[in-house]
Length: 238
Image (cartoon, rainbow, N blue to C red; front, side, top):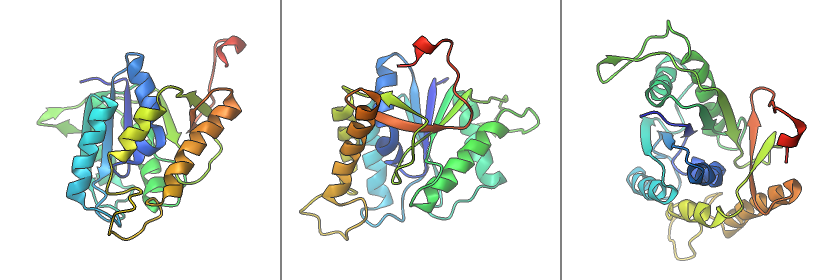
């Protein structure tokens, strides 16, 4: 299956938190989108890996994505080496995306920055013919995505561009709240975490409103780029 967009997250819920609105908008425009989670989030303070598996499946249905896979790398301990790069390369060559979305380039959680660099490096290596991979017994052909964009997570990184997601925030929030074990629940008996507060959920909505305000729209999500953006004419900019 060829996808237009493949979004990677170090943990289940990273993609939903960082770029669910953009995914929803692209799907509404006819694009095919998939998600690959690097880990099962087994070191998370709340819930369990099995619960996160179920929540990720629910979120995938809410988003309407074409496919979701989990590479089951070690939460907290995966590294950017050949073994892990080859796992990512196999996914890129399997789905042949034009665009890859991945974790923030720098963030509070160490897996986010690691995951960002791992996916970025793998996107380059995936285009090299002499890097050989097989999937399900068949040799894969080289494929390099045209564009790699990094969504924004815990830290308020200045975006290089924003996507107008007005009209998609309600479903974005629904996909986030599918991870009910992770986020604000006043009845929960589980330990508190940095993302389990009411303030955290409110901050997500504030960010989309604030980025939207700065861009002249209602809501927006921000991304950073790896190379200069180019437009055909000044009129392409909004």
